[in-house]
Amino acid sequence: MSIKMEAVTKKYGKDYALKNVSISFEKGRIYGLIGPNGSGKSTALKLITGLAFPDEGSVSFNNQTVSRKTSDSIAYLTELDMFYETFTVQETIDYVASQFTDFNHEKATLLLKEMKLDTTKKVKTLSKGNRGRLKLVTTLARDAEVILLDEPFSGLDPLVRDSIVKSLLRYLDFDHQILLIATHEINEIEPLLDEAIAIYYGDIIGQEKVEELREEQGLSVLEWFKQLVEKFEGENK
Ligand SMILES: Nc1ncnc2c1ncn2[C@@H]1O[C@H](COP(=O)(O)OP(=O)(O)OP(=O)(O)O)[C@@H](O)[C@H]1O
Image (cartoon, rainbow, N blue to C red; front, side, top):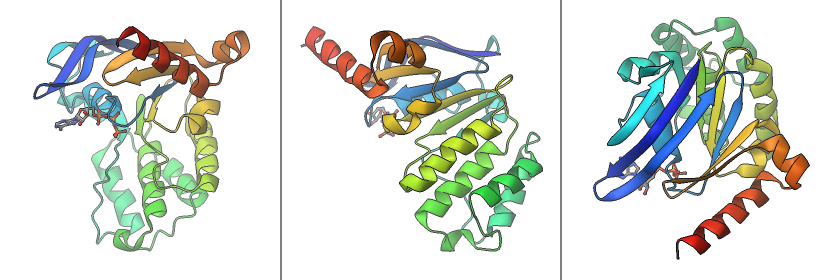
């Protein structure tokens, strides 16, 4: 199982969100797509799910060009949630379960407990953090081949962030899934990552195995990212 972006360019009007981007993702690995706000992370995820299409280049999932149908095989946590305000937490779970054949009720029950969510509460009464937790439950409970998380920590306090990192490791099926996390919160996800991909205003400026970064170059992902940005800025003055 793999995802491939080949020479992908995506423009919004005259502005480039992605410029000639080529990256690929293999199963059993955890990738971090890291970059500042507006660098093209969400655009890359939308192209992978078939919710947007490239202007140039191609995106494929298991060697087939991505289409709207691809989103059935991908659990995608977006920045915005689309919950019905009047539903309870349980009704929300049941609704998501009815939409996806890969929804795993057992996982959902465990995750709900772990995230300490009261299933009888209405969505509209949830705090921002608990809404974020519910979003994670509905995404991680799917046995999808690919899990894409766009800024999964946004609005969550540091204690919850830690427990989310742990849940991610516990609920991931390392033999079969690809996990791709897009975020500007580099330090939070560093312990999880196999590979880091640095994106900077539409350009992929680096890709590295995190273990090699640490052991061979003695760098944290953040330090590596800062060096890449300096080099890139120097070369593109
Ligand atoms: N629907 C859209 N219409 C017009 N411009 C867009 C649209 N979506 C994204 N863009 C632009 O494309 C660029 C990349 O945006 P994108 O949301 O992919 O970045 P990001 O790295 O995910 O940022 P953030 O962390 O702030 O979500 C930005 O300049 C953004 O303004």
